[in-house]
Image: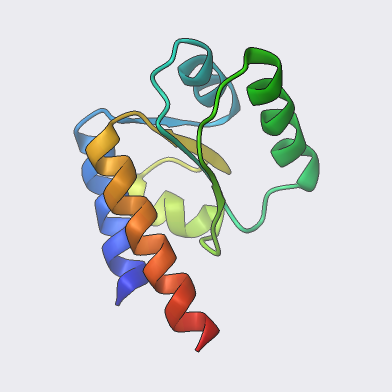
Length: 110
């Protein structure tokens, strides 16, 4: 249920043009200061996560990073674009998506 809400929220953010999807667009959103949250799919390589972490360090940015348990295929199904990394470029969407992901994590831990 929470997973579907999260994916639906990502779909809404996509339709509102508040997602930057894929490596190059996510990097650009970070560099231009639009990114409020960085999300990684469960099936991305650790190298990609490290690359984005280094980019944030080099730019002196403090943007939250969440490695989700959502696969690239699920992102493709709900958002319409297959990407392993995405940035949420709106504060309200970022807060809501982050909250849903944390709730889902808490449910899975129990």
